[in-house]
Image (cartoon, rainbow, N blue to C red; front, side, top):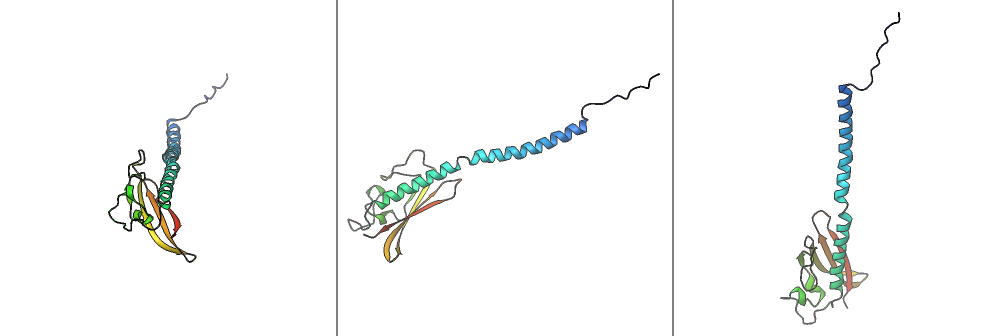
Length: 150
């Protein structure tokens, strides 16, 4: 007579399956969190580049104007009639605007603040033109340009 053969078991127990599912769930949660953050922040460089372009545009617009006021007054002017650099001091635009003061479509979430200050660099008196551009979700972008007082 032959001895009965021992039956071999194949597969996993219920406890092993539950532990495996828990390990895979924890791993997937970590991976999906990283993917979600990467997707959410992927547009951030584009938004920052747009803010830089807005600041550059304002600085170029201001830099093209004369330093001294042609009509001798800096009061009561609207942006469309700004005729010298100092007219822009303290300008705050909610939503980027063109030089006539009209809103630019698609850029309404940006806020632009301009400051003009007298400064001296290497014994040359200059105007420091600073454009600060903010938008929710990015750090404030600040660009400064200098214009000699002549």
